[in-house]
Image 1 (tube, rainbow, N blue to C red):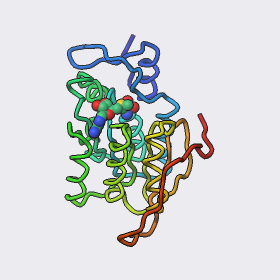
Image 2 (image 1 turned 120 degrees about the vertical axis):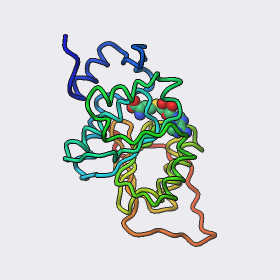
Image 3 (image 1 turned 135 degrees about the horizontal axis):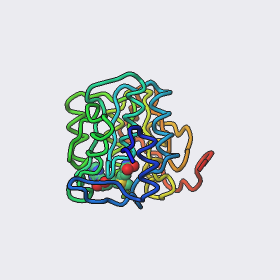
Image 4 (image 1 turned 135 degrees about the vertical axis):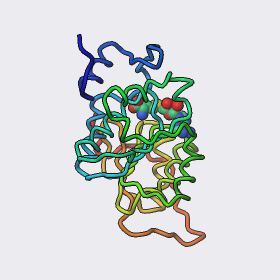
Length: 226
Ligand SMILES: C[S@@+](CC[C@H](N)C(=O)[O-])C[C@H]1O[C@@H](n2cnc3c(N)ncnc32)[C@H](O)[C@@H]1O
């Protein structure tokens, strides 16, 4: 059988077998790390509907989310390394399966991969003056990891841009998000297939130095589909 040439065919085959290939043909399990096809569709569709041109994700693992995000960019007619991907474990834990997947599907030219911890690399990108239209957060799922990602994305993602966060069912993820909606005017637009879709405000939000709105105890997802 010939190898899959589209993202949909690649992910369908991977889900059927339960694994993808890393370097040196090491099989790497999809579970429990990779997003599924429904979630991938959410990422791709959002890149398309937003007309996103510059994107970023934390947490590559097997690269399933990377494939869908890059597919969206390609369908938007874009080329060049405009999708920043951060993951310090790509080689050690995933045998470079994510990087292999983007090469296999001819999407490597869109990817600016950095094998770095997001809490160290995101501030560097801020310092470089980067601007991102849409980011996907799926790296360190501990509260402080998600919070750090969102903190730097508040400076990296353009005003009115989108931040999608996986695993909204996890209390640590929900609580981290709640700080930004309660204090920095981020809008939780919807939760689809456990992905929270957040929009940065269209105008700069700079609270007074002593402002603080308690943000804990978000218990239910609005319009939780999937
Ligand atoms: C749930 S998996 C990501 C799955 C991937 N988005 C997909 O759909 O296939 C989480 C990934 O985050 C990475 N990770 C953990 N801490 C990180 C951090 N501080 N910065 C960037 N990536 C991190 C792990 O190495 C792992 O690959």
